[in-house]
Image (cartoon, rainbow, N blue to C red; front, side, top):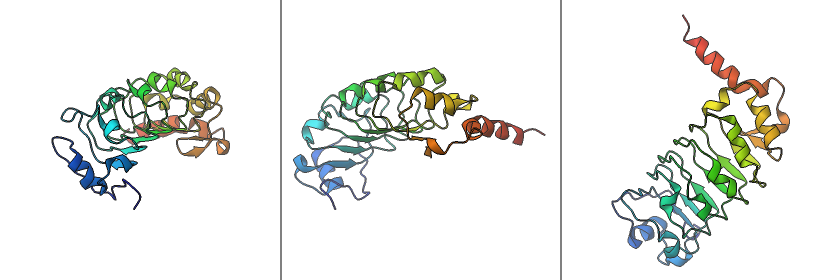
Amino acid sequence: MEDGVSDGHQVEREYLTDDMIVQVTRCRDLRRISKLEMPLDTEMMALGELGRRLPSLTQLKGNGSNIPTIRDLGTSLGGLRVLWLNRSNVTSLAGISALPGLEELYVAFNHIQDVSPVGGLARLSTLDLEGNQLSAKEDIQLLQECGELTALTLEGNPFCLERGFRRYVKETLPQLLYLDDIDVCEDTPEEEHLPARRAEMAESEWVE
């Protein structure tokens, strides 16, 4: 076991205490914890000081949490490199600029409509936005400032149903290596229209 790895143990309580963190990570020295995995509820827990209590934290896995806005994580997690908040009721990425060192962000299956806050993350290389509520493909232009971004997942957003979507994304973000877990170099002209064709097939299945 690495320092601070939770081994999958999770604790759900009303307040986040040092004892809870120790129980999850099995590490009594909070200063040595580099990875934390547990669901968080910012409506019940004050997390603004989490980074000061865990100064070595680089990975936070909070899938299944209740964190409506990233701002609720506070401004003390500047050392964070990887953040998982899949299925965590996230509606806004506002406040993510407080995580300038973030390299990987996983926020699939939430309620995100605006990706503009992510544009300031210069080190971001992996971004998972699957199953959110992004409706305008032009919003992809907001990610052009993420010069290190090489892996992007967008499947399941409304704008993915537009024909030629993959081609548009690849032209807008030419540094991408993977789009929706598919090597962009392996795309055929037919595959560039795959999301739209899937939608058409799904609709046809319901036609009598």
